[in-house]
Image 1 (cartoon, rainbow over the protein chains, first blue to last red):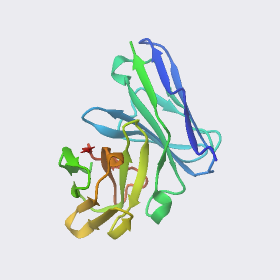
Image 2 (image 1 turned 180 degrees about the vertical axis):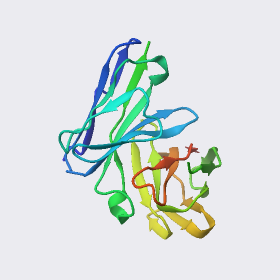
Image 3 (image 1 turned 30 degrees about the vertical axis):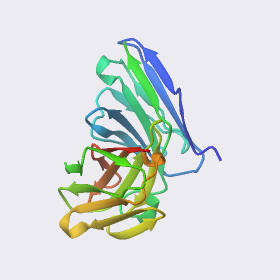
Amino acid sequence: DAGITQSPRYKITETGRQVTLMCHQTWSHSYMFWYRQDLGHGLRLIYYSAAADITDKGEVPDGYVVSRSKTENFPLTLESATRSQTSVYFCASSTTGGSSGRGNIQYFGAGTRLSVL
Amino acid sequence: GIQVEQSPPDLILQEGANSTLRCNFSDSVNNLQWFHQNPWGQLINLFYIPSGTKQNGRLSATTVATERYSLLYISSSQTTDSGVYFCAVERAGTASKLTFGTGTRLQVTL
């Protein structure tokens, strides 16, 4: 049972380059999420998806693009990377969302550490 | 947006000691989760607890939704409890958007 996997685990890029972070889950969870973790800010939601082809913005969406053509995949793209996007990125998934009881529990991938030089 | 404050920000305990971590939030919530981030960065869900009390081994949690706070109790702490504990809430009416606190960093020493 692979669960939720993120790739790559580490990435170094330069400002202005496009970068795509991958997230894959094997549970057929409906909901998927992208967060970034920075010192002093905890985790902040970038984008989330309630199902294939349904995405919505979170707290800090600027500079990021997401897509979800298949239930199991939720890639995050930095269209033109900036130094302020240096961070650790976490993908998560849950069975349901909203007031749905234990289905709301979010399961996290191992994270991708991104450095933008 | 909803504000989530955790206290204390840092905590150092000797192995075997008990501790209480607190999470205050500024609005009504329909979802509250506690997470543990271990020293290698992995985030693990500990509790889904929008109200009431739950126990899981040496850990227990209580949420008093009407007073807008939640407590995480760690008893007989072990070095493996070290890491950062996060509280995350979803404001009522904002489906699926968890807001995280800035965490309590716990270090358990021998």
